[in-house]
Amino acid sequence: MLDVLIESQPLRRRPLAQTLASAALHAALVFAAVKGTQGVAEALRQPVPDATLFFALKPEVEEPPEVKTPDPPPPAEVIVSVDPPPKGFQTVVPPSEVPTVIPPIDLKEHALDPRNFSGRGVEGGVAGGVVGGTGPVDAAAKVKGAVFVAAELDEPAQVVFQPAPRYPPVLQSAGIGGAVALEFVVGVEGTVEPPTVHVVETTDTAFVESAREAILHSSFRPARMRGQPVRQLARQTIRFAITVQ
Image (tube, rainbow, N blue to C red; front, side, top):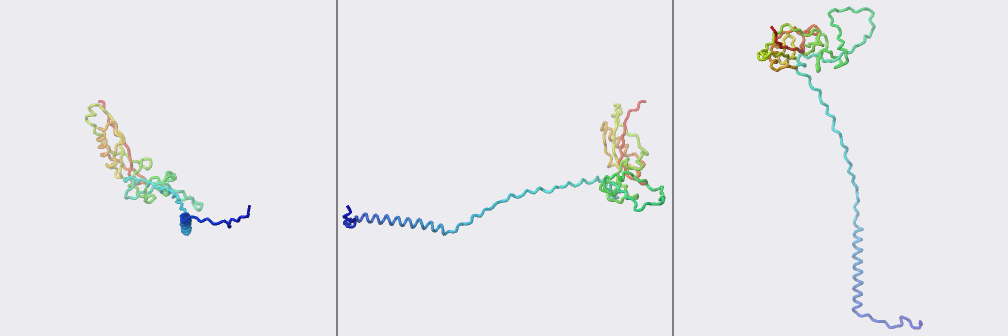
């Protein structure tokens, strides 16, 4: 069976066209392989950029600063050029040494006002002072420009003279009575300060002008504090009544 060698058989020659086709096919495969590997090599030679990640942090929301509302200024009729003392309280300072004798008594010295030790207001002030005042706090303090109420005074203002109010003819003929409550400031001279007069309440607006005239033509004994005249905020009701004859 093996008496004939393969190489002993005569060689078969391929046609020229088949040889050319085979060569062209191989050349095409080699070219494609070279081009394919060349693109990969160039891609590998190119440096790969670093991928850097950036994280955007959310900014903290800062709360706006608290805006403090300034205290309203005191009324113009209270703070005046005479520089009144501040409204507040005083502190009792205990003596450093215990006295062994009774100190002399000055009968002219003003008694202590318990309201000056209430603890309300500005430390170092007095109960009879005004809000915002910066004047000296002593017996000789100039408080004429300050406005006080009757409860704060040693001697409230008293009426010396007051004319009878003019009755409105229309209301008088109709037999209508009424009243007008007015608030005003009595000055240190005992007269009413016209700009301070204002109506608190009234039964009929027709009575207002007559009541205002009666107040402005009135005279008072001025209020006093620590022996000197001061201004006082006062209130008075002017009444209108039909007299039966």
